[in-house]
Image (cartoon, rainbow, N blue to C red; front, top):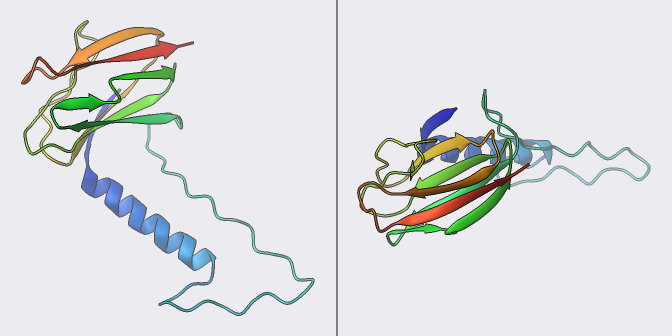
Length: 140
């Protein structure tokens, strides 16, 4: 499944997570609640998780910056979603040489996701700048 999103969505999720964690810890407007009384049960920890329909819980990231994919080779397990984010001022694409996946053109700050469902080696490049190449190795 291909999914296209912007860094704005990630920023909103991060801000919401920070608010939830702060509220769970009793932090409101820079103040904290009083310390729990001895013998009182501690509040359960809050676990923040980004849930997106059709995307596995396992995820990895590649940054596109300085006209390069970083890391240049990433090894992941089947079922992992890989997210590429363009940090360059120029547009880029993420395109498997086998045709297994192809992103739209990504402007600065935009991301592209692909979930790998089969093991193998997937070489890819930026079709706008074909000298930009990298590899995803998917293990069972």
